[in-house]
Length: 88
Image (cartoon, rainbow, N blue to C red; front, side, top):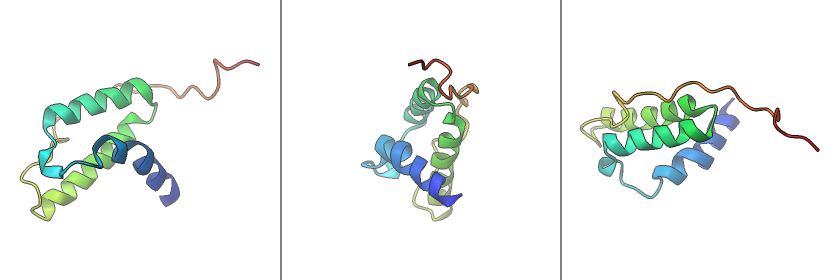
């Protein structure tokens, strides 16, 4: 649902790149952010997809010449914890 997409974008993608011009994001920065999301979140691939989609749209609009998220190595899949390590 749209609510979840907006929430993930607001909580994760915008804090990483929200204060930047999209032309200033490099492939190295995109890879580093993908790696950081991969270490921290089980849904890192989805976050990379959201960022990639926005930058691809910028490419379509000719706002950027290339998409820095194209060609990066995706973080490995992780299982969600869902409280497995939590105990009271």
